[in-house]
Each structure stands twice: as C-alpha cells, then as structure tokens.
Length: 398
Ligand code: AMP
Image (cartoon, helix red, strand yellow):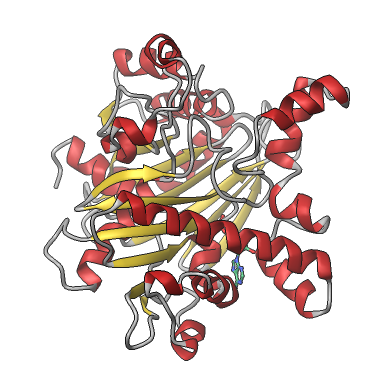
C-alpha cells in the first residue's frame, strides 16, 4: 500500500471535509468531516467501509487539532505511510491560476492577495493549508482551484459592463466556480457519448446547495453563471443568484438595511429558503409541494425556470450542442427538477424519457433523453477525484 493515496482536503471556516483517494482509480478508502470548529462542540467523523466513528475534538478546537486527529487516525489504520501528497480545494485562483499549483511561499503570498476577491472562502483554505503543512511536513501540498477551469472563457463572457479600469486595476470580472465539477462531468460526457477525448459541446448544470451552469466546448469552459463571487447566476439553496443590483441600494437607502444585513440576506436568507419560507433543502420542498404547500411549489417553479432560462441562453455561447448534463445533489437525484427544467427546453430539441428519468438517480449515470431528443445526461460528479488526480499530476506521480 506504499505511496498510493492523496489526502484531499476541503477546508471551510468552521469545517474540514477530507477523503483519502487513489488518484489512478478514484477509489476512496475513507472520508470524513470535522465540523463546528472554533467552538466547544467541535467534532470529527471518520467513515471507513461504511462504518462511522465520531470523536470530540479537544481545545483549542481549531483546524490544527482536526488535522492532527486525521494524522492519528491515518496512523492507527496504517494509511499514513501510503499518503504521498495533500490536495487542497482552493476556491479562488484569480487570473493567476488556470492550472493546479504546487504550494510554495509564492503561491501562499498570491492566495493571501486573492483573499480580497473571496473573503468568505480563501482565508479558510489558507488556514487548512497551513494546518496541513504542520501536520504533514514532509508531503507536497497542491492547490486545486475552483476558478481554474473557467480561465478559458473569452473576454466577452467574463467582463462586466463596468468601467474597464475596475477590471484592469482591481480584477473585477466573472471568475466562475464549481470548476472541478464542470471539468469532471464534461469529460465523462464525452466518454458516455463515445466522442473523442475533450470533444463535444455541453451545457452542464451543477445543481446543489450552490448551483451553477457552464457552457463547455471541446473541453474548455466558454461561459458560466457564477461571477466575481459564488452569489450570482441561478437560484440556489440560500443564495439569491442574479438580482437587479438596484435592489441593494433600495434596501440600504430606503429600507434602512445595513451592508451586513444585505450580505446575509442575499447569501443566507434568499434562494429556495427565502422563496419557500420553509427550507433550502430541495428534497424537503418536493415533499412539501406534494403535500399541497403552494409556497414550496412556487420556490421550485422559480428555481427550475431560471435553470432552463440559463441553459437556453448558453445555446448562444456554443457553435453546436451535443448534450445537457445534470449533476450535483439535485441534478443527480431529483427527477422532478430535471422534468420541470427540460419541459421548458423543447425549442432546443430536448425532451426526456420519464421512465429513464426516474430510474437514473442515486449515483447512476446515463442518458435520459427520449428517442428523438438531443442527449440529456445525468452524471454524478466527483470533485475529490479530480483534485486527487490533478494533485498527482502536479507532482508527476501519474
Ligand atoms: P449538494 O450541495 O450537491 O450536496 O446537494 C444538496 C441538495 O441536493 C439538497 O437540496 C438536497 O435536498 C438535494 N437532494 C439530494 N437528494 C435528493 C433527492 N432524492 N431529491 C431531491 N433533491 C435531493
């Protein structure tokens, strides 16, 4: 088992998701989650072969303590020697990174600078990297960026119609996120359709708590719905997606909201949660709708309509369209959302087979299109495998 696995780390401000992956096969040996970090309730859960083990973390309940208990767990289970690198999900790579990077002092300095563009995410990623460097001092650490895949977008897709100096001097532009997911499913789609590697034109819909749509041509992102931050685009679990920016001035100037209240409103209280006044959880909303809850139905109607509109808009970004792709927790599992979205896409010659739609859930992949329709694929995403593979490639291990 020597030199076999990559430890993949996805670090948030109060959580660390981790998994141990064989980059050649995508085989996952264990995974886990440290949560409620920085509080006395901090815990860490390890999952191996379907068995869960939960531990309380000790003072100071921080990322370093969590990383240390991961090291201990790996040692106890004889995995530690088999880990040959750590791959970190990093949210914002700005214009500096269109590829993953081996972390050194220069990369760290750039990540600190880029925290300006992603104040909610990059500082947590940096904390995770620093804790991991202490926990695994002899291992190479690699940063894999959510934004990197979208660096191929043309200027007409990534520039906002703002004074150009804001882009030149402050980097204000569309960056896009969920890059590793759109990368993974577009490659899997070429395979599913028996196209040559990196060939094909796709519109992929990553629908989860955070959601984004991406237009992909021959392996490259050409446009995507998230922007400078992950707040823009389609409706999400608790994020508003695109709104008229004038609403923000109205909230502050006429309704007395503070900047923090507006920020919380748009990021944490809007989307499916805000519209339904019930939950951000799609499955729960579907159940409520079936039980007659009108507000849950309205939230789902708006969610699906906005997805369909964005997919239709990206027909303008591509020279041809081989397939649309559904992925993410909702895209992979909700036959209801897929049916609603595709119902609005008949002008693009997309109709689905109802039986295939219902049968292709819970980890299954396949083409759910009706006979005469353009392909409509369901592909479970695997961001961890992408991070593991790219980490191994950076250190020339595969
Ligand atoms: P993610 O952020 O990708 O983990 O996706 C989370 C979302 O997927 C939540 O809104 C869940 O309710 C949704 N989801 C998971 N399973 C189902 C399901 N069977 N039907 C509908 N939505 C689901």
